[in-house]
Length: 168
Image (tube, rainbow, N blue to C red):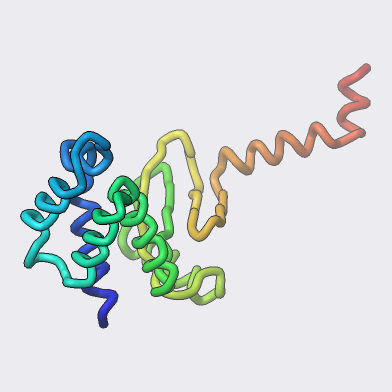
């Protein structure tokens, strides 16, 4: 499909943008567009799809190359939305096994909480003590022990019976 070539090009371009000198060159108002166009031709000519190169050329011709890092990032966001790909971040106090990650993926899909393709990322945070935090698609499921203790503690603040006992 035509967008898979563009996706590969923009993934590669995002990798090139991590080079500080290249990033600063794109953002520099001192370096002229024709010089930048020559650099782009040298770096990407023959390696990237013609549509990608034409798009870069239009931006360089119109002096809009300073927006390329943001455009490349947004392309990835839009591609993921179009292909229905979500990233699920799971934070736990200890590393999870692959079987447990797969169980969480299956549970999210089976319960209809998530749809489409799920890319799973795991992180560890020793301050959680127990439980886990799952984040994806602007949703947060906090099943950590620290969150449950905080909710338990705040329930005592709202309990009028306990308040009267403490106030004596």
